[in-house]
Length: 256
Length: 276
Image (tube, rainbow over all chains, first blue to last red; front, side, top):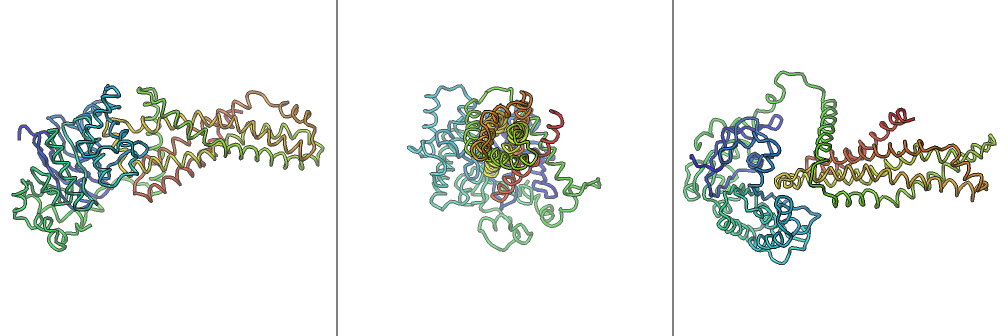
């Protein structure tokens, strides 16, 4: 507990009348891969955006190595974000730039590396996500799975301490999903970062996670390593794992 | 952590709606609230744009690219608009002024109207339709596809990276377009008067520049710069604050054009009052 890389305490967030987070408490250990699962609209993305300081909480704190993210000024926040890599849902690639331009973007903006060094690092990152020979293509020429992997490459370009994955496999076919999971797993083993992944794909969660947490009703209702998580005696967790249409999750009107 | 859920869980989706935002306070009717919200956002973004402008790194290539997009690519439509506006003005005023035997003033009338008023307002409206809408759509798409979040995450301020070059490119290029419009409007008037109406070319040319002074030209260009600034600020604002997917992008695009056009027409009145 004392050595937690990321420590979230009593995190609350509302959008207008809608209370999305209602007191999240969560620790992520150094080097761990934590997966947060939850239904659509359960506030998973909102949680992630608090960790990286894109959203400000109504109440509660997010600490990285003991530093409160939301107490940082603009300048400090810029430095602070250098330690992060974030892979967005659909990749969020800049569609006016080639794949190379996209992956090089954080390197160009945030380091003093020479052109050759940047090119070398871009190639290295692209090979880590198993995408060679496409660096001169535009994002619109790539498939959904490829776009996401380019997004991963961009996220790890600066060798961040913490990598955040926002629904890395949503909307992909099962085979591509499995490939993406492998890529994530290999990447994390390779760069030795702390990772938070949010997803609603249980298969993926079991493959990527060191620990799985379930977000429901604005709180973390379960948190355990994958094997233990699978056996948890909580009707909501079991319904989510099995993907049943009826059960405690659906009764409470959380189906949307 | 594990067992905390059951008691809290049933509440969220059932009945939180009425309690949160009001807190017993005074609330404006919705249209006013959204009006003040938009105005507030405008000045917020304006402040950030001005604050980021002097800060390095200076992205000259982005500025240049925007100048080409806003300026160079608008040339054909500005050429057409200005020529025909000048031509129509000459046509209209020639037939009217002939009744008073004052047709020798057509040249001055066309030139002064173009330089002081029409070039900048028409140029502004065209650029609002071409570039203001493009900015709304482009930034709006970047917002809904999380590209703006991605910029922020990669330690790049989106205002600095996206809005600053667009705003200054438009502020610089609109006066240039208006200058071109001035020349072509006058040319359009000349062609109609001389070729179609049989005015004396020498007398017409002399008359064109007889009453014009540099102040007329400058005030038109100042107006154009202000319009350019407003168009880009408004277009970027609408795009930057887009919500709601593809539909939201469409809404932002429309609003960018409508708001910018209204801003041009209203500020034109006050600028005219101030400058002349």
